[in-house]
Image 1 (tube, rainbow, N blue to C red):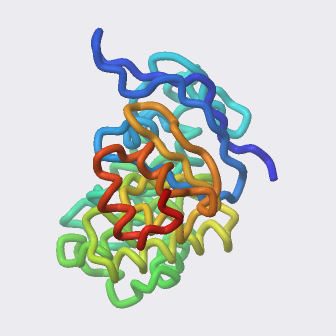
Image 2: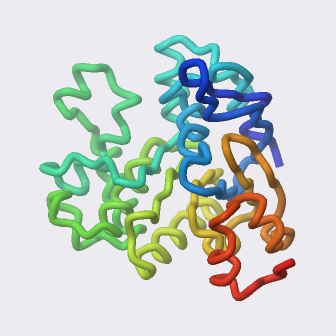
Length: 262
């Protein structure tokens, strides 16, 4: 499998004293499902946002599909972002627009500013939006306003909006943090399906260790802005959970039924 994303010595500094990320190194292959786990404030969101340059890394190199993201000008960055879909914890939908209108917003990266403002989408794009909503189990919700949808439905609209970009990779920032267990399972099943059926790489921030263990090909553990673990779900032990989560680890290991605790 080809390496799609490669991070070398990526750091992010805020002001003089706050280092959000320190020397992050890892790579992700095409079609892989990789979870990033760690306590709140570990730097997981900052890391994802550096990859698509929503924020700029202070140093290091982020290679995506053979291109150094950190060096791109505005025009090239817009083009690159069409290949990186983003799924947010709080959905980031336009409340007054319908599900299908929100999905079509995923095409804005391909439009001129005027076409975007006027909402000029072609027939093919509209058909693709309908198809994605149906695949994600939202045929009944296509013309409902976003503010009339449940959290799980909103997140599926968010996934459809990312997929209509025709991305090579999805960055998912805590996509199930605001959802109940049943909706969370539906979202994770869809993301896993996207990865296996379409060969789209998924990089997913998760707080829930059990979910990461169930769905991931590989797991990256982050604590205080550093990678402290990288490996398969099978390699995670109670000791490693302690290293990633510090004082929070006890209850997580208890939840996992003491899996390999030691």
